[in-house]
Length: 139
Image 1 (cartoon, rainbow, N blue to C red):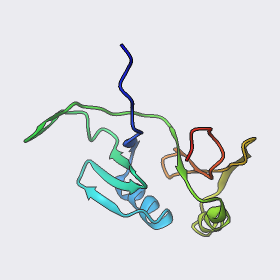
Image 2: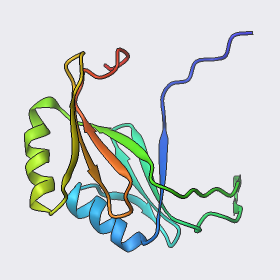
Image 3: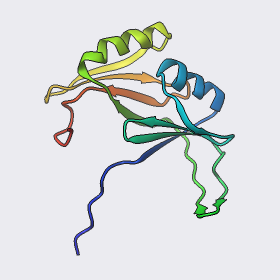
C-alpha cells in the first residue's frame, strides 16, 4: 500500500535556554511576530509554516487540552534550520544581521543557483537564510 501524500512541513521546533532572550532575537532581529506565547513556548508564522521556540525543559510533561493530549518532547544541542528568503532580499538580510551584531557564520553558493547565509542564534542554533535554487522541489 502506498503512503498517502504529505503536504509539507507544518512546524519546526527549537529549544532554547532563555525564552526572553530568544524572543528578542527572533522578534527584533528577524522581525517575526508571535501568533501564540505562554511560559513554555512562542509560535511564529513563517510563510505557511510555524516556527515553535520552546523553553528547554518546558514541554517535558504531557499537555492535556480539551481536544486531546500533546505528548512530552524536548531536545538539546545546536540544530540547523533554514528560512526561505527572496534572492533580491539577501543583501538586505546580511546588512540587517550585521547591524544587529549577528556575525555571518558562513555562506554557500549552490550549483542550482541558490545562496545560503548562515548565522547563529543566541543558543547557538544554525539559522540559514536561503534563496531559491537549492533543492529541485522548490517552487
